[in-house]
Length: 503
Image 1 (cartoon, rainbow, N blue to C red):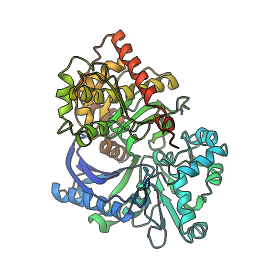
Image 2: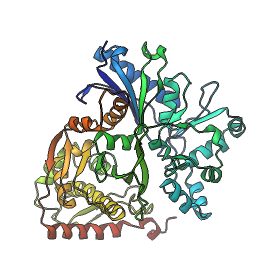
Image 3: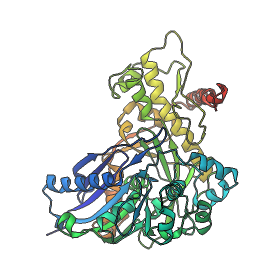
Image 4: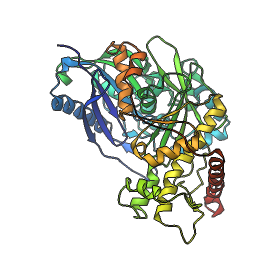
């Protein structure tokens, strides 16, 4: 039987998805399975590891059944995953020692503060490209080893295994035969030296994490093993692994230096391909490994995270209740000639890159008696574009790369007003692809390359199709006027909690 498809497993924060991709790079069938979020304390977020696995396995089986596809028709499996989420399990029993600590969890924030006070921030940034923050996996691993009875003793005996979600899925898919991760996920742990491409002993010592629990690091695109035949009725090669945002960059076929993508979701994740040399940011951005294809060199990216993007529109709907659906904002924003001087800084949980102000809070400025819900809707959409400008302008400064275009995906990328305003405020074309399943596509492409389902990256470039290009049409002086207003609004949002006497 011919190999007709690549199966992408897209394991996210709230659901697990499985998508079959055909040779044209198009999604042929999709299944999704949600799972429970756990909040044991304020600021803590957990998942049950078995829920992650069972939901992903169920989604994969539903795809095969729903599409009436036999396992023999699957050329390979590619995995993409929520990053930084941390799981430790027993190698002999396969049982997790604790719930997964999710990337959003803030339980180790104080530990990060202490490490910064001890002068370790520069060491970690130089070696890992990351800031010392509870977002990343390293301090989560330390917390588990310190908090679970006998965990350190078992870890020292080589009994325990640590993994991000990709590693956990690989372990389960292979029946416990393979404990592995790829460089894109390893680079999010605070324990991986992104220049040497190896786990770093000095960083491990600073975090008090034993090397014995770490996974083997394999290329992002390579056959690393096969699924246990009992799962799908046949062993299927596992050939692609990438963290979700790097997978989206690859799915957008941003494979050349200087290409960039923005994913518009609850927040925004911007990545710029910087080629084979890591670029250390001077602007509070993150340097990360993008991927490693087979025996080829490591490739790198600059990344900026915007905490609130689509969530600002959700607040208009669910908080203020001035719109019934997110789609309504496009017509409202287009119904007025300009923002009327109204700016909305959606710093509900502080400001992310490049400001990193945990004490900023949401602010609306410039209101007059004539302002209405259409101005708030427009200001919310414009805020997404302004925040994207703030990050991309710093990426340009850090890298010296002049961007030719921005490729976009995610739910809010379907909003034509936002995409046109984004192009106007950046002064470069914004390109929306025909296939918006870019994260899963990236995992599929990485796996397909490894088994020659697609012969090379040039073939993938042919598969990627533009749906629409938004060309900048705004006068330069108008752009500068709007950006100056945005900068003033951001300054008024910064440091709000200390101004109120709040610690």
